[in-house]
Figure 1 (spheres, helix red, strand yellow):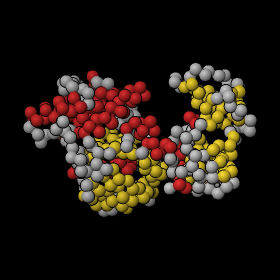
Figure 2 (cartoon, rainbow, N blue to C red):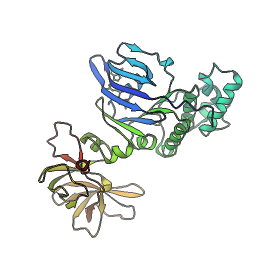
Figure 3 (cartoon, protein in one colour):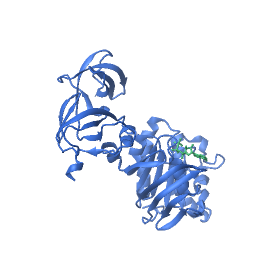
Figure 4 (cartoon, rainbow, N blue to C red):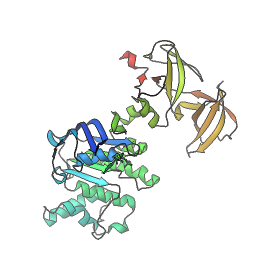
Length: 371
Ligand SMILES: Nc1ncnc2c1ncn2[C@@H]1O[C@H](COP(=O)(O)OP(=O)(O)OP(=O)(O)O)[C@@H](O)[C@H]1O
């Protein structure tokens, strides 16, 4: 067990927080709670308020309404801010910002000046083992790859044993292949340290790979705060359904609580829908719900095709002109213009009242009525 482990009693609570720039609210009525050791993620499109919220938690932005607290201690409320350096909150940023003229060891020990030299050296060695760069003490940042530099930045942020670690787009500058190994690795390190962490990203895959809970933000608000699985499979609002996983909506009519009529046939729902019979609804569909199937009676013309390595993503158009995205194995190399059979393969059904979408809408899953 490393001596860098932090106490496990720190819970971070953001309660009904509003943050304004002048008269404009960048963050509106946001609440979230991270249990001790939990890793949260703020996910959302550019400008939705992720960094602003993170900066307020760090103590760099005042809040106009609500409270930020850690382990029961108020850090911010309107007119009051514990200074950033007194919050025991560590930060890692996208632009890694290691000191170029200092060695790796000096970079990591930067916040450890209260310790004697031998303790600093011991802590640095432990942290280098933790981030997979044992023995790199005397190297300089310029001799490290981007991923290695980000590991050192993480070690530096963990060195003073913060109660909470905040990371703002920590992987944004790194290439996709590197991220595939680095992101789960950073999660492993955070879990091993037992640290409560909040990570900002606009990349869904990163959010799924690192977080226990994802807060999907839109226009300053949290649309849903849930596990990656729930965000993907049980989106609570049309916005979440649309933002996550290339979701789109297939118009459908409920024939009964268990039967749904769609352009791709009548579907049987295992759980009853919470809409009346004959209700006009929109069914959430993702590309992986639409399968190529030569046995299917439903033909569609391939109107676009993207090779993704392990699979093809086809854009297909039905006889009535409706376009869908469809996944097929990478061996099924069809040409644009060809007709293929397709079918829906849905595990569960997420339905929305048919949109005349001016209002945000909440999803009603087929299971909801059973609860
Ligand atoms: N210092 C500032 N002064 C005025 N407006 C600001 C300031 N910082 C951010 N904003 C505005 O607040 C809103 C939220 O910005 P923020 O940077 O928090 O979004 P974000 O989700 O982190 O976006 P990105 O992913 O592009 O960094 C945006 O409309 C932005 O223009």
